[in-house]
Length: 208
Image 1 (cartoon, one colour):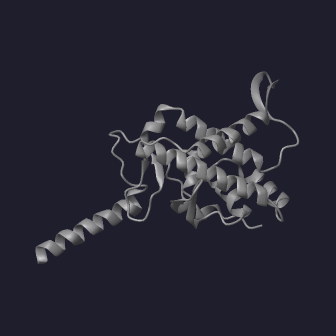
Image 2 (cartoon, helix red, strand yellow):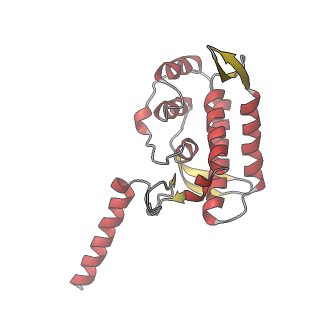
């Protein structure tokens, strides 16, 4: 299994929103959001993204890749479903709307599953949360994402969730800029494109 973390870009300032940004062109269906654009096409992509996002280290990524070389379909499905729920909840915050009940229920379901797989322990002279034995290898990634989403959405930072203003972009991020005036996912990408469009529009007006 080939890992390719370089294909992913992290701009959101939050782990759960960086996962959301692995999909694009979201459309609301009867019960959930679904993307037309997909960057996590297989389990290798999910592990690669987790490596890029520092959700796991390189050694763990290699072990996961070896263990799930011919599997991981269920975990991939769960990650995508969780991603859609997080997107729906984040967009509800941005638009000032009441979140969909299905999105709320699904994130809460994953939150509870994550907590059930943790054990409070004392080792090496300190208290810690340890994963219970017997969990699927990819569960740790999905658990981490779910808990990160809950932490974001229940914090004051949720008020700073934004959608990129670039045409056909729509990536989400937390605006931690000093003036709370960030408009773009990345100034070098959508920001520069917007500048070019404004320049060309202004030049066209002058020429006419």
